[in-house]
Image (cartoon, rainbow over all chains, first blue to last red; front, side, top):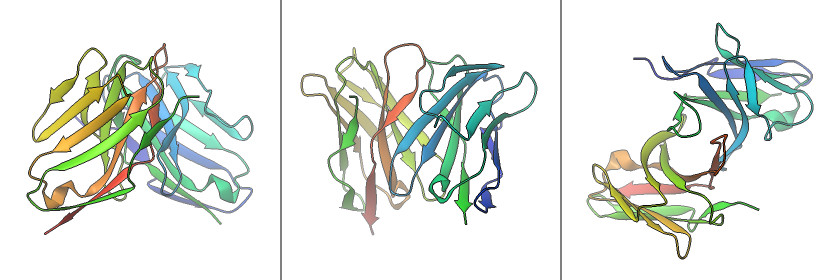
Length: 114
Length: 113
Protein backbone atom coordinates (compact mmCIF):
# COMPACT_ATOMS: atom_id res chain seq x y z
CA UNK A 1 0.00 0.00 0.00
CA UNK A 2 1.70 3.13 -1.22
CA UNK A 3 1.95 6.07 1.10
CA UNK A 4 1.04 9.66 0.37
CA UNK A 5 2.59 10.74 -2.92
CA UNK A 6 3.59 14.26 -3.81
CA UNK A 7 5.02 15.65 -6.99
CA UNK A 8 7.13 17.26 -8.02
CA UNK A 9 9.58 16.79 -5.16
CA UNK A 10 11.43 19.95 -6.14
CA UNK A 11 10.03 22.89 -8.07
CA UNK A 12 11.84 26.03 -9.16
CA UNK A 13 9.88 29.03 -10.37
CA UNK A 14 10.70 32.62 -11.21
CA UNK A 15 8.79 35.43 -9.60
CA UNK A 16 5.41 35.90 -11.24
CA UNK A 17 5.09 32.32 -12.50
CA UNK A 18 2.55 29.79 -11.31
CA UNK A 19 3.30 26.76 -9.16
CA UNK A 20 1.16 23.61 -9.10
CA UNK A 21 1.75 21.05 -6.39
CA UNK A 22 0.08 17.65 -6.48
CA UNK A 23 -0.85 15.26 -3.72
CA UNK A 24 -2.22 11.74 -4.06
CA UNK A 25 -3.53 10.49 -0.71
CA UNK A 26 -3.10 6.98 0.60
CA UNK A 27 -5.48 4.42 -0.85
CA UNK A 28 -8.83 4.63 0.88
CA UNK A 29 -8.19 8.11 2.28
CA UNK A 30 -10.59 10.85 1.24
CA UNK A 31 -9.35 13.65 3.49
CA UNK A 32 -6.37 15.81 2.57
CA UNK A 33 -4.56 18.51 4.55
CA UNK A 34 -1.92 20.90 3.18
CA UNK A 35 0.80 22.40 5.40
CA UNK A 36 3.66 24.80 4.70
CA UNK A 37 7.05 24.64 6.39
CA UNK A 38 9.47 27.54 6.30
CA UNK A 39 13.16 26.82 7.01
CA UNK A 40 13.88 26.05 10.68
CA UNK A 41 10.20 26.20 11.56
CA UNK A 42 7.32 23.88 12.28
CA UNK A 43 4.56 23.10 9.86
CA UNK A 44 1.68 25.55 9.49
CA UNK A 45 -1.78 24.42 8.46
CA UNK A 46 -3.10 25.83 5.20
CA UNK A 47 -6.22 23.99 4.05
CA UNK A 48 -8.31 20.87 4.64
CA UNK A 49 -10.25 19.25 1.82
CA UNK A 50 -12.50 16.30 1.26
CA UNK A 51 -13.41 15.08 -2.19
CA UNK A 52 -14.82 18.05 -4.12
CA UNK A 53 -15.14 20.17 -0.96
CA UNK A 54 -13.00 22.68 0.90
CA UNK A 55 -13.73 22.17 4.60
CA UNK A 56 -11.32 24.61 6.25
CA UNK A 57 -9.12 27.13 4.46
CA UNK A 58 -8.38 29.30 7.47
CA UNK A 59 -4.62 28.96 6.96
CA UNK A 60 -4.58 29.89 3.29
CA UNK A 61 -3.39 33.35 2.22
CA UNK A 62 -6.36 35.26 0.84
CA UNK A 63 -4.73 35.98 -2.50
CA UNK A 64 -2.83 33.89 -5.06
CA UNK A 65 -3.36 30.55 -3.28
CA UNK A 66 -6.04 28.02 -4.09
CA UNK A 67 -6.61 24.32 -3.53
CA UNK A 68 -8.85 21.64 -4.93
CA UNK A 69 -9.49 17.94 -4.50
CA UNK A 70 -11.54 16.74 -7.45
CA UNK A 71 -13.64 13.62 -7.57
CA UNK A 72 -10.97 11.96 -9.69
CA UNK A 73 -7.27 12.64 -9.48
CA UNK A 74 -4.91 14.22 -6.98
CA UNK A 75 -5.37 17.24 -4.78
CA UNK A 76 -3.77 20.36 -6.25
CA UNK A 77 -2.32 23.34 -4.40
CA UNK A 78 -1.95 26.23 -6.81
CA UNK A 79 0.09 29.35 -6.20
CA UNK A 80 -0.27 32.11 -8.75
CA UNK A 81 2.27 34.88 -9.35
CA UNK A 82 4.78 33.40 -6.93
CA UNK A 83 7.01 35.64 -4.83
CA UNK A 84 10.25 34.83 -3.02
CA UNK A 85 8.38 34.54 0.28
CA UNK A 86 6.52 31.52 -1.10
CA UNK A 87 9.74 29.51 -1.05
CA UNK A 88 9.10 26.71 1.42
CA UNK A 89 8.40 23.02 1.74
CA UNK A 90 4.76 22.14 1.16
CA UNK A 91 3.47 18.93 2.71
CA UNK A 92 0.20 17.19 2.31
CA UNK A 93 -1.24 14.67 4.71
CA UNK A 94 -4.15 12.30 4.32
CA UNK A 95 -6.47 10.48 6.68
CA UNK A 96 -9.32 8.03 6.10
CA UNK A 97 -12.09 9.81 7.95
CA UNK A 98 -10.83 13.24 8.85
CA UNK A 99 -10.69 14.89 12.22
CA UNK A 100 -10.60 11.79 14.39
CA UNK A 101 -7.83 10.03 12.50
CA UNK A 102 -4.06 10.15 12.37
CA UNK A 103 -2.67 12.15 9.47
CA UNK A 104 0.03 10.54 7.34
CA UNK A 105 2.37 12.88 5.54
CA UNK A 106 3.89 12.81 2.09
CA UNK A 107 7.55 13.60 1.33
CA UNK A 108 6.77 17.21 0.45
CA UNK A 109 7.42 19.54 -2.45
CA UNK A 110 10.25 22.00 -2.03
CA UNK A 111 9.42 25.19 -3.85
CA UNK A 112 12.18 27.65 -4.67
CA UNK A 113 11.27 31.02 -6.12
CA UNK A 114 14.11 32.80 -7.88
CA UNK B 1 -4.18 32.28 20.97
CA UNK B 2 -3.16 28.67 20.65
CA UNK B 3 0.48 27.76 20.52
CA UNK B 4 2.60 24.70 20.89
CA UNK B 5 6.21 25.17 21.83
CA UNK B 6 9.28 23.13 22.56
CA UNK B 7 11.65 23.94 25.37
CA UNK B 8 14.99 23.38 23.62
CA UNK B 9 15.95 23.71 19.99
CA UNK B 10 18.71 21.05 20.08
CA UNK B 11 19.30 17.99 22.25
CA UNK B 12 22.56 16.07 22.05
CA UNK B 13 22.76 12.59 23.59
CA UNK B 14 25.18 9.68 23.63
CA UNK B 15 24.22 6.56 21.74
CA UNK B 16 22.55 4.15 24.12
CA UNK B 17 21.34 6.83 26.53
CA UNK B 18 17.70 7.76 26.99
CA UNK B 19 16.39 10.96 25.39
CA UNK B 20 13.64 13.21 26.69
CA UNK B 21 12.10 15.85 24.46
CA UNK B 22 9.68 18.29 26.01
CA UNK B 23 6.77 20.30 24.69
CA UNK B 24 4.39 22.86 26.18
CA UNK B 25 0.95 23.67 24.85
CA UNK B 26 -1.37 26.50 25.70
CA UNK B 27 -4.87 25.33 24.75
CA UNK B 28 -6.32 23.44 27.70
CA UNK B 29 -9.23 22.34 25.50
CA UNK B 30 -6.99 20.32 23.16
CA UNK B 31 -7.74 16.64 23.47
CA UNK B 32 -5.26 14.91 21.20
CA UNK B 33 -1.47 15.17 20.84
CA UNK B 34 0.96 13.60 18.40
CA UNK B 35 4.72 13.31 18.11
CA UNK B 36 6.27 13.32 14.65
CA UNK B 37 9.84 12.65 13.57
CA UNK B 38 11.22 14.47 10.54
CA UNK B 39 14.45 13.45 8.90
CA UNK B 40 16.27 15.80 6.60
CA UNK B 41 14.48 16.17 3.27
CA UNK B 42 11.53 14.03 4.29
CA UNK B 43 8.01 14.47 5.50
CA UNK B 44 6.96 14.10 9.15
CA UNK B 45 6.66 10.50 10.27
CA UNK B 46 4.10 9.55 12.93
CA UNK B 47 5.71 8.22 16.11
CA UNK B 48 3.09 8.06 18.83
CA UNK B 49 -0.05 9.82 19.95
CA UNK B 50 -1.99 10.31 23.17
CA UNK B 51 -5.46 11.49 24.05
CA UNK B 52 -6.21 13.81 26.91
CA UNK B 53 -7.92 11.08 28.95
CA UNK B 54 -4.54 9.35 29.30
CA UNK B 55 -1.35 10.27 31.18
CA UNK B 56 1.04 7.88 29.52
CA UNK B 57 1.30 5.76 26.43
CA UNK B 58 4.08 3.42 25.40
CA UNK B 59 5.26 2.24 22.04
CA UNK B 60 8.35 0.47 20.84
CA UNK B 61 11.25 2.26 22.62
CA UNK B 62 9.12 5.42 22.94
CA UNK B 63 6.88 6.72 25.69
CA UNK B 64 4.73 9.82 25.68
CA UNK B 65 3.74 11.50 28.93
CA UNK B 66 0.97 14.06 29.24
CA UNK B 67 0.62 16.40 32.20
CA UNK B 68 -2.61 18.30 31.76
CA UNK B 69 -2.16 20.29 34.96
CA UNK B 70 0.83 22.16 33.59
CA UNK B 71 0.01 21.57 29.91
CA UNK B 72 3.20 19.68 29.24
CA UNK B 73 3.99 16.81 26.89
CA UNK B 74 7.17 14.78 26.68
CA UNK B 75 8.62 12.13 24.41
CA UNK B 76 11.03 9.63 25.90
CA UNK B 77 13.21 7.52 23.63
CA UNK B 78 14.93 4.57 25.25
CA UNK B 79 18.41 3.44 24.20
CA UNK B 80 18.79 6.18 21.62
CA UNK B 81 20.31 5.07 18.32
CA UNK B 82 22.01 7.01 15.51
CA UNK B 83 18.90 6.44 13.40
CA UNK B 84 16.91 8.48 15.90
CA UNK B 85 18.75 11.63 14.84
CA UNK B 86 16.09 13.94 13.42
CA UNK B 87 13.87 16.88 14.25
CA UNK B 88 11.00 15.99 16.56
CA UNK B 89 7.74 17.91 16.53
CA UNK B 90 4.87 17.80 18.93
CA UNK B 91 1.49 18.62 17.40
CA UNK B 92 -1.82 19.43 18.93
CA UNK B 93 -5.08 18.55 17.32
CA UNK B 94 -7.52 21.36 17.60
CA UNK B 95 -10.73 20.46 19.28
CA UNK B 96 -13.57 20.90 16.85
CA UNK B 97 -14.41 19.52 13.50
CA UNK B 98 -11.50 20.05 11.12
CA UNK B 99 -8.75 18.14 12.87
CA UNK B 100 -6.00 20.48 11.65
CA UNK B 101 -2.72 20.05 13.47
CA UNK B 102 -0.88 22.83 15.29
CA UNK B 103 2.85 22.15 15.30
CA UNK B 104 5.60 23.35 17.59
CA UNK B 105 8.94 24.63 16.29
CA UNK B 106 10.77 21.33 16.65
CA UNK B 107 13.69 19.93 18.65
CA UNK B 108 16.74 18.62 16.84
CA UNK B 109 18.01 15.38 18.37
CA UNK B 110 21.67 14.65 17.72
CA UNK B 111 22.97 11.21 18.69
CA UNK B 112 26.69 10.97 19.31
CA UNK B 113 28.37 7.62 18.62
